[in-house]
Length: 107
Image (cartoon, rainbow, N blue to C red; front, side, top):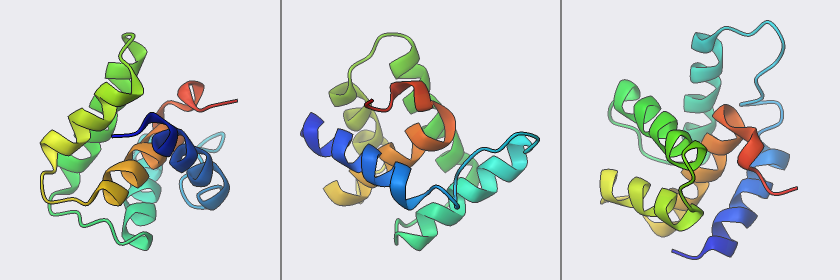
């Protein structure tokens, strides 16, 4: 996976998901999760199990929060969802960062 593509996708997610997966003041975790899942659907990323998909998003952020690299985060996603295209993996990662760990988005 290319780190630059991941960061570009993360920036794209910021722009594209502002109204979709933007955690707003007062939103519950359930509302944020639903917005994230909706954003995935809008981008055509196949989701078979909502709970597993949400867990993967949180594990992606946990990895980054614990000092992991963006390459490691992309590999985590790819290993969990082997049938996803590279584009799906990168878009999922960008949306996960935007929804759950914005501190890892490029400035």
